[in-house]
Length: 204
Image 1 (cartoon, rainbow, N blue to C red):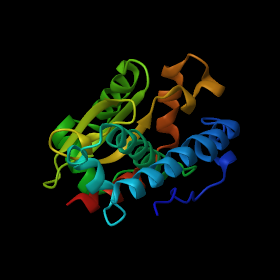
Image 2: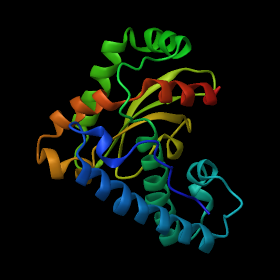
Image 3: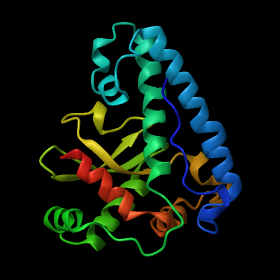
Image 4: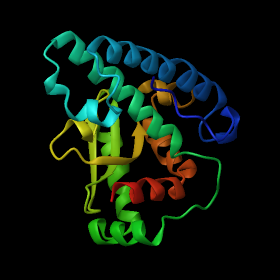
């Protein structure tokens, strides 16, 4: 059975950048619902022996359209939220590892350029979706956006996301209303680069 990532912080710890009510609703209701529905779809599809990464990268092998859609939407929601909640924390001043910093400078020129690109992707996503930083098996980094609950595992290359910015309205609307830009800017105030660095190391 797939489980929600266990938070290493309390819901109120990300104040003032992400408020307590948003965290309670986002993690306790939205993420919990995706997890429950994904587990039900996995059991129905007979895929309990597969990892979430395997399921998301081989969706085309599921012949039943409704079941495939459920695995895509709920599996993506489960995976994306696990990543999102695992890379934010109340820790201040975190920095990428030397390996990740080198890759960022190589593939984006600088940390400042990468942050600007990710912010623009998040703001440019029409409607609900995500912005991702992902890595291939050789350690090359990619900044992309995906609609709904899609992610790079479902797309060409099947790259591994190491950072996710949720721009569904449920991630910010209770606090920021229509000011998505303020939320995205403040997301980087709670982004834990040490966590992102660990994700990067696991890709190679």
